[in-house]
Image (tube, rainbow, N blue to C red; front, side):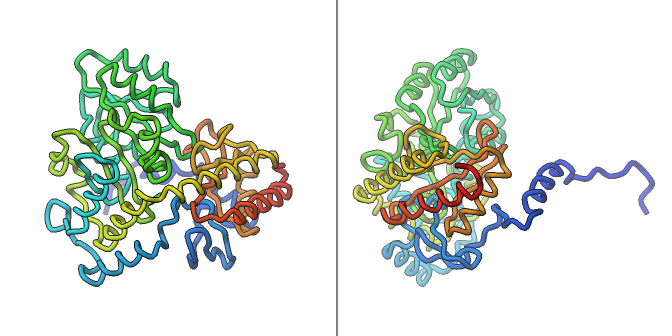
Amino acid sequence: MMADGPATGDLFSKFDELIAMREGLLAGGQEDPFSLVMEKVLSPTQAICNGRDTILLGTYNYMGMTFDDDVIAAGKQAYDEFGAGTTGSRVLNGTFYHHRDVENALKEFYAMDHAMVFSTGYQANLGIISTIAGKGDYIILDIDSHASIWDGCKMGDAEVVPFKHNDLDALEKRLRRVPEGAGKLVVLEGVYSMLGDIAPLKEMVSIAKKYGAMVLVDEAHSMGFIGEHGRGVCEAAGVIDDCDFIIGTFSKSVGTVGGFCVSNHPKFEIMRLVCRPYVFTAALPPAVMASSATSIRKLMHNGNKRAHLWENSRTLHSGLRALGFQLGTDEPQSAIIAVVMPDLERGAAMWEALLKEGLYVNLARPPATPANMTLLRCSLCAEHSSEQVQTILGMFERAGKAVGII
């Protein structure tokens, strides 16, 4: 029997405010915006959600590769020939033919010397950042960086120096203050996922190189879509050869799951032995890798789909502005269009009104969003037809008027 003592602290008490917020949102019988179930997925742009036929506008399936016939066929063949999983780490028994094939496809796609595949995009940032920048090194990063970037910084124990979002002067001031001789890594994103805005990479990479820093760019939300060959904002800005590391994910344009890093650094291959989130986790199933390799190689030749996706983005952006909605960017900069809500309560009401119309979007809330904004985040797909985009605008108009947003 334990001796009497002070009451044990409730380890869940730190979440009480969030629990209360969630309960308040659901008190009126509203559907939970963070627990939606896809009961049946019909295509890259349509699913059955809560028993309704629903247009998907919040899945990051930018190039619509999830239902590509060749991508699915490659996965089925790998299942039949190699089984369901690897049951091992990449440095033990977990490297199958398909893992090397994906890495070769990435090297072809980016025209780079090295490629390393992780089990998720989150792990790619976690692993690369924490391994290359450690105690005594400095990481200079945009304040709006993704959670996986911040977690990679924390895990590596480097000195973390954030700067104001997309602010060139702030970046240079931070770099100027880094002690002479210290290791420096500048971490940027091509497209920032909350507002869908792009980084001024041409200027930022130039500033980083001026101060002798290495550069890592996360192109999760631009790979496959932005740039002449779909290599991302780095390519569009003409600085891809000056980027030391490019991080990406398969769960957006590629349409599968996994993460990666490509690099031209001559010592890069040692990362396979020293990067803990790569060494100490199971390798992805061969079917996922076979589908991914097929998708990546098809993305190299998808200029027509990229052009249609840009058309969809421009049409939705201008249409929502014409209806009176406040948007996260003045012009469409990517396949993400963020609709700014007055507050969380009306944002959640608008989300539910859209779902009842037959449209799924993401409800994004603080603290994940910049400046404590509540956003309805739309991610367009190259498979959305022009007619679907017009239907979506009608849904936004009806829901916006019903909720009192417009």
